[in-house]
Length: 380
Ligand SMILES: [Zn+2]
Image (cartoon, rainbow, N blue to C red; front, side, top):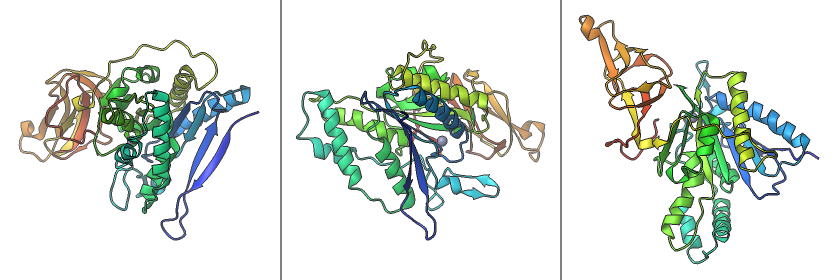
């Protein structure tokens, strides 16, 4: 008997006559007590994740028809129905809430303090028991919250579906990029099998990325509680990661079916899917600190001509791009170079070829943390 179910959860109506729903696909018997949660399209304008979901659904349908899926697997293939409706000027926007300009992958719920208060007198010497106590406290706290605005309701629903998962994968993409992964530093190197299996060319680690991205809403609470209660064993019970599936135009069946297969193998190796996973491929590059990502910014207006492409190894002083302004006086002044201040891997460049002073042109993952980056390590 197959286990697949499809559920629609109606979001509370925020505008008269506008009802939106989140679709949740579930697989598995849950017999091993392990849960994985995967979503795509939190940034609704990022197409690769949706196509990966299509291929993953095919793989999971086949596995489900063939027999027992021992884990519990939840897919939310379109995680942001609000953003998915944001058509404007023939472009699907979907990254920022139209109401307050908040990035849909920022300002997710942080319930660590509330959980701390609730569990402080109940922890024990058993990591499993503590995990159960913490998850129960999270359930109670999330059940007791009813945010007012629609985006906050969506964020609350996404966290309510995933906070108790052992594995959370949030599928995104960058503008023009190689595959790369964001995750919490305490999860490394245990979670290096994800980066290796996905063929990720960079893994960017931070304990706190700033402004509460979704993956951290799921995972960070565990190492923060472990630090708050050092006398008690508290496991890192949720391995959450943001997987950047290259760039927005990297949408093909060849790429998406390979990504879906890799996710399947990762879940298989972690025991959530039946069968034995193939040998883990080697990690392409070691993880580096998110604080070590250099943001190459334009210093002049003009059109951008890139000299380097995502995946290139960069040396300090390399010219990443030229900015050309045909109105500047004299040939020398018409061209401004954008150089790298560090050695590293070029992970992404911008979506179009226009510059204004201060605009981000490229991101380079370096090995050393950089000074002066402030608290918010993620880009807009
Ligand atoms: Zn994104």
